[in-house]
Each structure stands twice: as C-alpha cells, then as structure tokens.
Image (cartoon, rainbow, N blue to C red; front, top):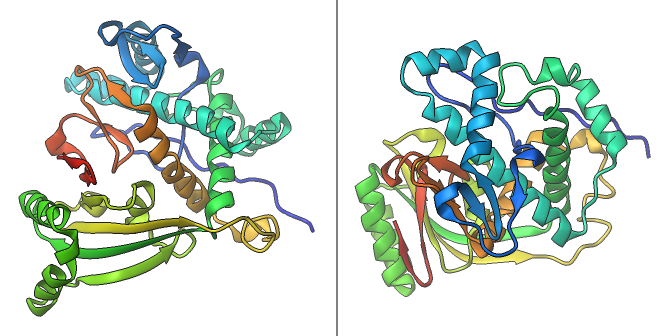
Length: 324
C-alpha cells in the first residue's frame, strides 16, 4: 500500500491579542528536567508527576521568543507578556505527557519521519517563525506531533464514549446543572427530559466514536466514566455544554480498527493529533499537573494553562466530587 508522507500541522502561532493553539504541539525537550526526589513548586513553573520545568528555563524561553517575535514585543508593550509565559508552560506539559504516553503505549518515532515533517514545513527556521519555537527546538515539536498522531490513529476507531448531554447559557448555569447531574446521576434522564420539554437540545444515552466525533465533543473522550464535564465550545460563553460521561470503552485492536489498514491520506492529521491529545488527558489526571500560581492553573477540559478558574474553557466534577 502506498501512503503519502505526513503533513505538518501548523504549530502555535503568536497574535497580539492571545496565543492561539491551532494544532497539537509540544514544548521542547530542553525545557524539562527530571527530578527524582520530588521537585519544589517554589522553583518550578510546572510539575508533571515527578518532572519539573524550572522558572528560570521558562523565563529563558520567554526571552528567546521576545527577542525574535514582533507580536511578542507588542504583547510586552501592552503588559500582556504573561500570555507568552502561559503558552511556554502549556507546551511543556504537552511535551511531558507525549513523552510518557509514548513510553506507555510502546510508540516510537522514526527520526527520518521527523526530518521529513520539518522539511515539509519549509525547514525549522521558517516553520518556527511566529511561534514559541526556534530552529533548534522545532524538531522536538515535530517529534511530539508525530507521537500525538500515532496515538490518535491507534484509538480513532476504537474509543467510544456513552453520555447524557444538555446545554445552558452561562458558566453559573453550567455549574448548577453539573452539580445537579453529579449529585444524582440516576436522575439525569428526568432532568434532561425536563430540559427537552423546555426546548433545550438535550439527550441521553448518546454514543460517539472518536472517529465520528465533532471537534466540540472531544473533551468527552478524556474523562473517567461518572464524570460530569462542562465547557463552552470555541470559547462561546453564551453556550455551555454539560455532559455526564457514562462509559468510556476501548475496543480490542484488530487490523480493521487500529488504523493500520486505512490509507494515511484519508486520515486528517489535525484530527489524529486532537484525538491523540485527548488520549493523554487521563494520564495527566493520574500523574498530576501542578502549575505555579504565577502562571495560572491547569485546565483539563481545554488542555491548557488558564489565567484563572473563571477563565478556563470548562471544568469537571469527577465521581469523587466537584473540581469547579
């Protein structure tokens, strides 16, 4: 079978208003330093499990971005350079999750594929323009993207979630509805029937595979069964999705569903990367992701660093209790 080469998904770009993550990327390996005896939060920008990124290293990366990117310089003039710092920390988290996820899943990356991906992007120097990367670190970013794509391909046709879902019009309404569903999951059908009677697009016992899921539904694939997840898709704070994930099931791998028989050209690299990132969300919950408060906090729904809880894309209420 003849397949086309991997296509590079455009990395995080810098804009004067906010850093936009346009595809799955990861922080460079140089950002991370393993700490065997328990890293200190006081000197760390972020700790993922037992691996920490120091405050000094994050500042060095921010300085490097500031030196090369006019958009970052504009943010500094607007006293918004903290957006750059959060992006650097966020990419570091993604990198560490990709590294550990690859080890657990037995995923390896061919360095020839990494070179090919970088070359297709126009070379590391050109491709890193407008991003938090440079010519030296962009190769690490490409390697992590390939890991994400392999994870996505592995589970795209095997992962299914079953859920109840409804909509509300504000964060506070989402908090109230999520608490209601989490407190009495056995009454969710009654609650959602009332929503339907009021004209709200609500439904119970819905099933989606990762392959068939629209992008706004992807947060449902990264939480444990019994979790209520609430979020505003695409940052639209006038519309909130609230869903109770009933089941998260992975079918056994077969030649028909593990991605090995589908022509690569029929698989969207961006979709594969997005699914791959969501497959790492449970790993993040298991390891624990601690963000230094100077940067904000980890938003498990957006898989990003948010300035505050009120500015996070969403929140989860797990089986053990609320996390709002």
